[in-house]
Image (cartoon, rainbow, N blue to C red; front, side, top):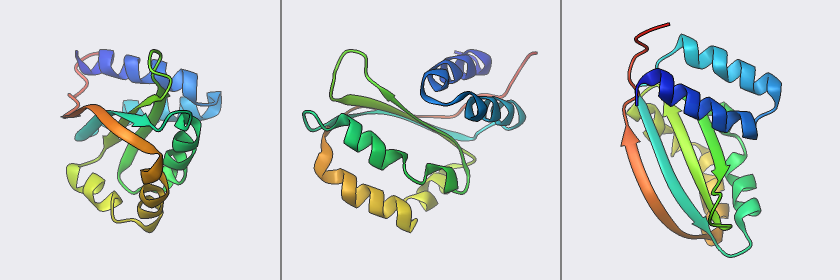
Length: 131
């Protein structure tokens, strides 16, 4: 998948999750910058706790230095699963985010709601090659 296809898929997911103003801001920012590091992963919540887990994981994501995109989507097959897509300026920026007090707090509060993890992949987004 090339960068344009990747961005189109990411923005389609964002269109479902974000209000219009936030989606337009994300589109503009994604076209300007090319992230150097990305993650996508599946997380399973304890039965019936998906919404609570999403709420915790969504808090404070706009204030993570170096984060260019953080999307949480509900799995369409498994009622307890979510997918998280993260785009970062660098792998180091992601690692630094895990030390932020707000992120540490979210991990602490979210951990009891997590039943397990599914597929996880790290990737390097590719540069834009065409219009």
